[in-house]
Image 1: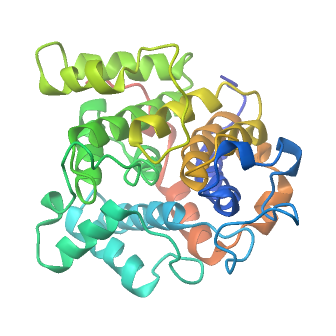
Image 2: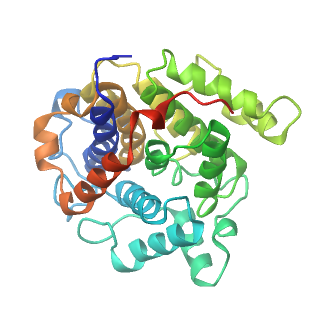
Amino acid sequence: MNAEVSLEDRIRGGIIGLLVGDALGVPYEFHPKEQIPPFEEIEFQPPANFDRAHRGVPSGTYSDDGAQALCLLASLLECGKFNADDFAKKIVAWYREDYMAVDKVFDVGIQTQKAILNLRKGFPPLTAGPSEDRQNGNGSLMRVLPLALWHKGTDLELVADTFDQSAVTHGHIRSKLCCALYCLWARRILQSVENAWESAVETIYEIFPEGTIENAELETHIRPKDKIFELKGSGYVVDSLRVGVWANNNKTFEETVKAAISLGEDTDSTACIAGGIAGLKFGVQAISERWQRNLRGKANYEPLLEKLLQYSNPYHFQLKKT
């Protein structure tokens, strides 16, 4: 952990990092890892001979991942708390009215789409997200980082809000726990804790000790203590979290997001998840100027980022007990 990176640079890096990772991964989505170009050719504009995904989308455009993260950030800043009703309205506005999208919505996960239909039918937001075992996509994980950057409560309060944030579109306990682990990990980085991931894992087990349903889920399906695991670029929430942990063993922001993309498949989401953490670790100045310059949607994210920075202060990230 580089203690010389300022708090402001970490916060900027987190938001810009998730958006850059998302936008960088967009052209490579749906391709198996064998078709992904070598690191030096992975850019906003893919190689000329590459059959890019989302052909009509201009290079440097973030997708549903980044747009929903900005929906969450806007809701937190406007409401001063996590408000499931307001967040749900913003997610529906994104889907129907292109709220926080760069141009038009061009990608939406199956579970998120089902949840939005439920919301439009009048389901309460905290019951709208599908919650069956096979409905554990990464849609709530990819957007959750702003909650960790904004939150001033205890670890337990942060975890409770991550659970509710997930429930709006992804109601299964596995998705909720992955979001909680990710936010605790981000918080530990902001607190300059060494071995931030291990500290987050320790905390989640303290909150959910042996004998709880959550502990059983951690031990059986998520297994965050494992040092060796199969890497997959799929949209499964556990795979995506593991890719984020693995990719962040790299030494630079660029290596981190490109490592996530190199696994293929759900490249925009895995690079978004890995890039948000890498942005926190290395700070905004470690993100290539070419990527920051060519990232689209500045009118959406720059005002929100400035408001988040005004809201934040050093006390915000003091290590708090559960």
